[in-house]
Length: 241
Ligand code: ARG
Ligand code: ZN
Ligand code: CA
Image 1 (cartoon, helix red, strand yellow):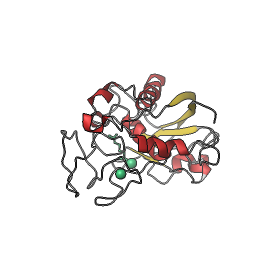
Image 2 (cartoon, protein in one colour):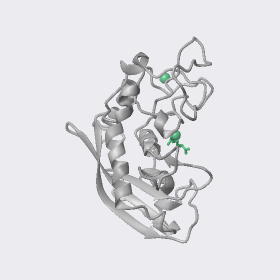
Image 3 (tube, protein in one colour):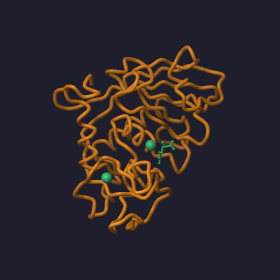
């Protein structure tokens, strides 16, 4: 890519109930959240503790809604095995996945808010899935996951970010400027949260790649930005964008 990265987005809506057939306004509200969170223009960016403000990043990537595709279904839940991404399985095939971020909005089930495919995987299943009830802003989305941050988190995975705890006890997320976390944090932790991992340090619970409530997550780091940006250069896994 040359200069600014703008990601075209196709939202694929699978609905059985009227509530699952989320409105265009709901969809646009999610695009707006992504644009804020990925340009450090989210209003809660100012809440970043000074300890972490030096590594807080403006990712500099924006998102543009290219199309919305809707399909009615009789399925009550879609699970996490990519059926929603296949017309043969009753879902919707992705649109141009090498040049488009596909987001599926449907009921996943099992308490799962969303899931994503990392870069380098099969193009027919590339993209992110966000449960319809945690998609975008507005009263239609369910608190405490009603600020559109499930998508901010899942798009982070789609751009090669690991969970901040490295999916292991005091694990490694392959990013040097994020502190070691013991495990996933939930709720809205009060800063400072002293890590149980040694040597002594505070955890960056407000990072999008933790598991806190939507209101508790509001930053990426420069190291995370470097991982994401590397995908879009020539030879990178998402160089088509
Ligand atoms: N992959 C996580 C899940 O399925 C998403 C966590 C998103 N967190 C949030 N605050 N929205 O549960
Ligand atoms: Zn995750
Ligand atoms: Ca780290």
